[in-house]
Amino acid sequence: MGAQRANENSASTGSIEDLDGFGMAVVREEGRWTCSPLTDGARTDLRTAEKELLELRSSGAVFGLLDVDEEFFVIVRPAPTGTRLLLSDATAAIDYDIAADVLDALNVPVPDIDPDDLDDIEPWEEGDLAVLSDLGLPDAVLGVILAETDLYPDEQLSMIAQRCGFESELSAALDKLPR
Image (cartoon, one colour):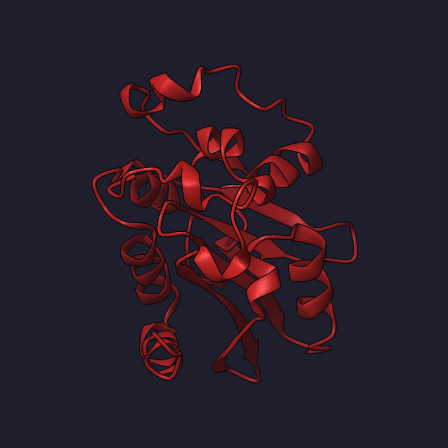
């Protein structure tokens, strides 16, 4: 991604407070979008993110957007058939536990890459590119957004929000977060 990987701030070696980024629950119910923050724990623990999203109990679409340490993002969408996941950068699993958890949930091995070589490796996504296709974001368009590796995760998530129609709600919720 556009940001440099920060090993000393990774979820594997640092604390939640050391991580930049955000976790946001997104709900579409009766044609209206709402965005609300998830706890800090949702950015570092996949099960926590799933639990918080399931507790929203909406009859409409519910998913989470996790910007982890301004390095990568995860889309988490609980469903009756199992949680649908998308990880924007599979190489993040080398430094971040939540990325490794996503790969584990997808039955994808953590890439065998020397951490010293990460800056020379092009990131690639893993997971369900159609995770938001029913909400106006075709998998091909999401693939194009993910291919924009010079963008930071929050910029990519803003593009996703714009395509789905909740950009102003996301922006307003982010403006309320402590920085």
